[in-house]
Length: 414
Image 1 (tube, rainbow, N blue to C red):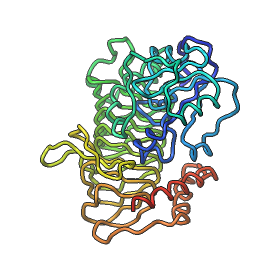
Image 2: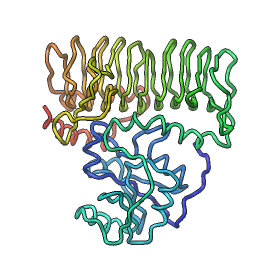
Image 3: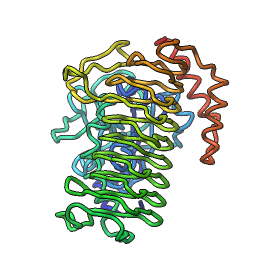
């Protein structure tokens, strides 16, 4: 991931990727525990996309309570850019070439500004469009609601793949595998790329609709079928006989099995056994038990309604397909059944038979038939520490501050 790419024009030394309160709220529960620029949309996170394309240092400016974990170092001046926009070179050039004191807007929303933190914070608080602002007339993809993560994943993988592959040599692919499609993309890049230490044996790899990227130390076991575009993160595993449809992104240190279609798994999460997951967004430190199935299509084929936190209700979407949205540190037991477009918050423990309501608030534990109870923070911390220690990761004091705030917010939805 050290590929050098051309820097954007302008002389900015730091890009600060900021969140707005509105975007943060509309992207819950995934944004409960991370800045929007840390969302994985494609192989890379939004922040990583900025760094690859600009060649500049990028930092996060999330909502207040997340700054305990993502603090800002002092600086005199920076370029501020919206963390919810998926950048391309044209947008980055427009942002980085802004004169001091000038802003860039899309509609009535400021998406970039060059200046000091104090001036920028004052501008955000007033919600006023500065007189120096100009309209950005190009086209950009952006995250508005959480389902945009899986909706934009196909495009994201195709954009990220050349950034990671160009100028590098893939590890050889074992002859035990079957490749469907051309070994080379029209661009001349290999359609399958294995980083150092990646292992793929006895698998079927279909690259007719997009490439397959296997990161360092990852493993695809025998009998697995992958249909690109697919990305498997470092030290993750796709188990024997799995069926992985594109566009799917699996982050680092995850174990995946069964049938997966157009899902984004941020990392450190497991769905290691049979069961279906489609059109889904799964956070970190999650576990989905064996035989669990999450519907992504209503029986009457009608458009989907999805829980929206700031509205405190289910909002209309234009989607026909939407599956599970699952916040960090949530768990689902074996043989559970989930309705179309189920939203599960942070720190949930779901088990038992029957279909639960398609919204389960954070820090809840129980079953559809027996009901739900609150999960005390101490119990949540004990479980989280136990789970994270298996990957050599510690629960920090900053993490605890974040979860305390999420716990306060979660109580409003119970």
